[in-house]
Image (tube, rainbow, N blue to C red):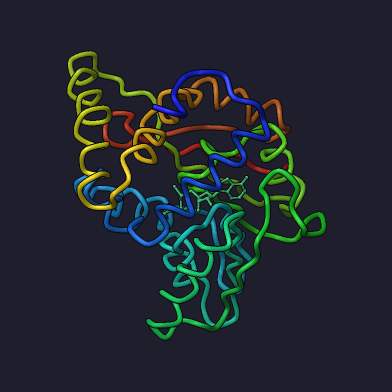
Length: 243
Ligand code: SAM
């Protein structure tokens, strides 16, 4: 593969992540369904339904991509709430905005091209900051976590949904087979793009597991950090608060 476990420079990683998401933007939603057998929809619904929001609140959904999380959260805020969908990739943002607009969803939604590591928002701007299947791709995760804390209001919640470490030993070989054999083939078949999907599987293995990510949130300054595994740890939701 061209971007497997070998060491890559920070600049090169940024470029590769950009390339992966530009190349998958169009087929992204279909691939998510195929990859997770549709289960990602349930994870996202749970993630949004149990996030700490209030009517009229302001939410930042980072690495928001094609807008699944932003749409779910928007529904919980009432007419005066706002969700800002932030993503580093213009193509993903455009796909997300078009999809929302086609469904008649315009009010209380904004789109901002931004890097999670250096957010273009003032301190204490949001009641909730979410990042779903995004932190894994961020080069400087500690910087991103510090930025999430900075833009939160006191009492606000940061919530991370990300692939994590599968708990059951017996399930690991099956999961690995799916990730490294099935997934890249699905990528080739449905998106004409095997390498991007291989990159995704590899990036999941390199992402810090549950306890390590919890420690990173604490080190960034979050209070009351906790996590919950979904589907046996295939994904986990981490929460932290700004005290
Ligand atoms: N949150 C969406 C979802 O759950 O369907 C999209 C997740 S997608 C796997 C990852 C997204 O992260 C891509 O849209 C990519 O452009 C974005 N991304 C990668 N690095 C980023 C960064 N440093 N800052 C902001 N967004 C980033």
